[in-house]
Image (cartoon, rainbow, N blue to C red; front, side):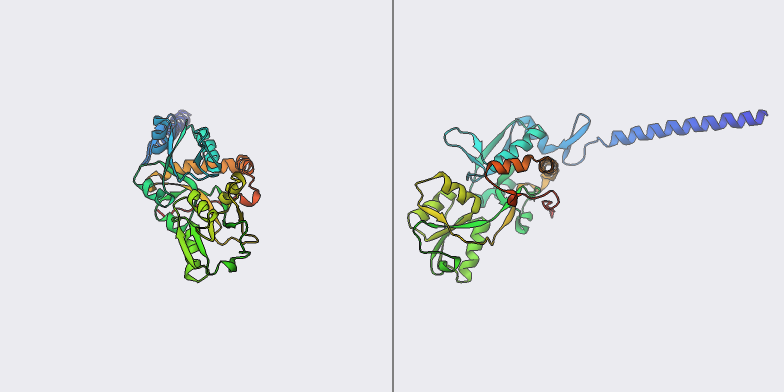
Length: 301
């Protein structure tokens, strides 16, 4: 009987030790999950990226943009940043606790160069997520999609893409549309390709007859023509876009932890309807929406 009581006491002691070890192990595991890893820093009981911490510390995120409406631009009258990309980013910043957004104006073709030179935190300027760009920077999940348009004088005799043969066409270097124009030139579908540094000079060129037509972003073209009645221009129609693509933001490869924070927030905005509401504010239909599943970006580095 005494032996039985002894065995029972030993068993209870072993059970107590096992429970104590289990609690200690769980506590240790929980503690290790909050330890900082490469590219992250501790913030209370959760981790956040080093870039997010640095941005919060300085009080704003510095983005690069070529200053084109209606994507990411400064309103000359109010001095405020506006555009569909800005509105999406502003909501992301609010949810991530970033107080403000500031913008550095850079030629579109140099945006990723300046990003990797660390002169900006992020590129936010209707940039297509493309295989060649994924070799240069890390991209977020897709924000929305769109394609190109051809803009011609209101009294132009051009009625189809076939009519561009032998004609001069303007385009902005560094854009997908310039690459499309280069292909057309190589295939003999246009006569001459002329480069213009930004959207304003591009539209002025076709409006003043320096070129017969220009190829540019469809959303930009539609917005520009609706806002500026002095432009005697129109969109070529019917027209089926060849360079349709999906838009995202970009950061340096070393800041991929930050882009994951952006992605988590962006996907939540898609699911709760906030992103679609922003698109509708710019008269963009559900044709421009990219779902969470379809919008995943696979970064190569």
